[in-house]
Length: 352
Image (cartoon, rainbow, N blue to C red):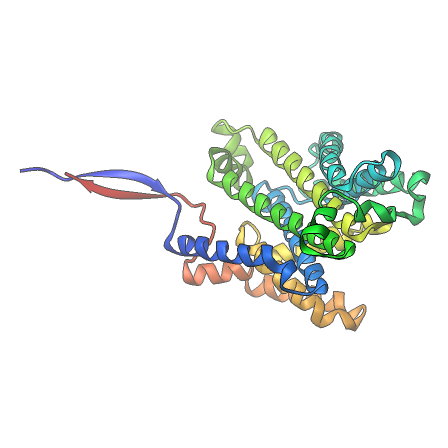
């Protein structure tokens, strides 16, 4: 007579997440084909959604997982964009190469920023990040070579002749402006995939467990050997790089920059916080839902002028009152569905 003994293994995947994986592949295939299917205006709208989603996922990683409530992420958007403009205008570097350079420079500026802001906690940290962003904005507004306070534009040929545009013109018969929009759209789509993939991998790793412990109770996490400061610094630098690259990509597409626009706390932080809060902070799915809702609201309410911001605020307050964990949190609590599951479960298998 043989006795069955249980064998245990840790699983995170669910049935819903497996089905979503196949659906996501189909969605991505259609998304990559979009420049050949839809109009240029739709591509620009999709580009906006994708770039805002990347910014929202990064802020969510900072606030929702590392517990770092920053209202100064516009510093990396603006600095990255200015670094790209400087590389192109002053040194003649191709905009696509300048995107990577700007991302690395954003990490460099994040190091002294972290040195000062990490000495602050809670609301003081939030205010500190905003102050740093304002200081950088004022400094770059003095940069006369890039237009000073009024800003400047990329040379006309910079985007028309950047790497890949000529190839797309020859292969697909696109106009230069259409090819440039398609190229930045594809880069934004790749950036979304890489960002979500990186965050999902991080949260499923041992470092992700440490990060969750730091967020929930930093003192307790330190007591069990988690290096909280190192974990927070790593996340802060990673988000600085991705946010800087995203800001650069946005301004390659805009081809025009000014300090007030590049360092706008409303465009690059307030809207991002709104997206994360209404979608669901501390989840990967939340910012995806939030950015879709935000885009729809923006198109519905944008004609109402200053009432637009008021209505956005009112909607945010109502959602926070009736769904504190956001729209996705409310849905997930009632259905148990998780598209990006990170919770580990023990599953027993009987073996003879």
